[in-house]
Length: 329
Image (cartoon, rainbow, N blue to C red; front, top):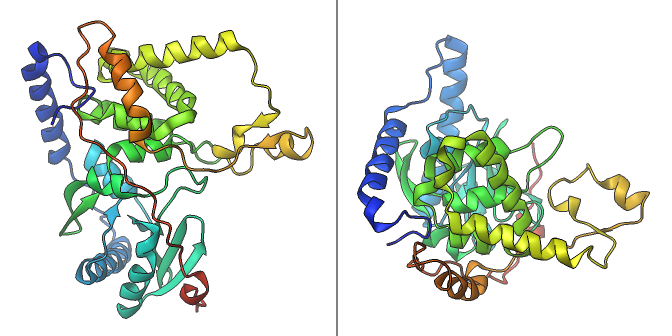
């Protein structure tokens, strides 16, 4: 399958070789070993809980993907210690996942019915995530269609697509946490093979957030700017110029709530600005048709996309919050 960010045909062999070399470098890396006895015992307990959770979901046939630190390591080779296991799944699968985990001895809790549940084994826990906290990155069939196989904790499973991981991380801009460096590392490691049209479709009307991250990426990695396709940079710049010429939007809106839960409360409480509704962005397929036609009219050096469609409708089934919520011990 041709990826929309792939180089021209004459450079395909060189690009494939470079991707293979980077993949080999990531494969050769392994997480550091904890050398103190207490640390080993603690880590063994944490890993046992994560393995038990994965096995329960796999045996029950619950579709899920691993995200978080494990997926980040698989894509970039960057190890990051983590206190939990992040599992991504569709909202409609949460009841089945909770039942499977409860049979395995976990206590389950729908922490926030908008986006996350937890499964506890004592002080250790598993996150079950079916959306982002701002309501934009809803896990749908497109995530599974483009998920990648991996071996996590000795089990064959899927890891969340790099495009969706970037989409989710791009909106994390808190005082205590900013995921811009993660976005940069993912682009640097995977930019040559990413489906950039699908990623652009994920951002939908919030494409300015993508442009902000791409600008930062180009600053951080000036020697690897080509890993972001030129057509995408030109398209986003064209939109920016068009928007600038149009002037201010006729609304007193502050969209800060989409990137931070706390940092823009002054704007709403004191300045009277209106928060942006946390509605899901359009599915990738919704914006792809017009963009493909536009790209075909561009210079011949840019190839038309050959990517497969990605993105399914969000299931309408809600989570049975009252039944699933259980008291923690």
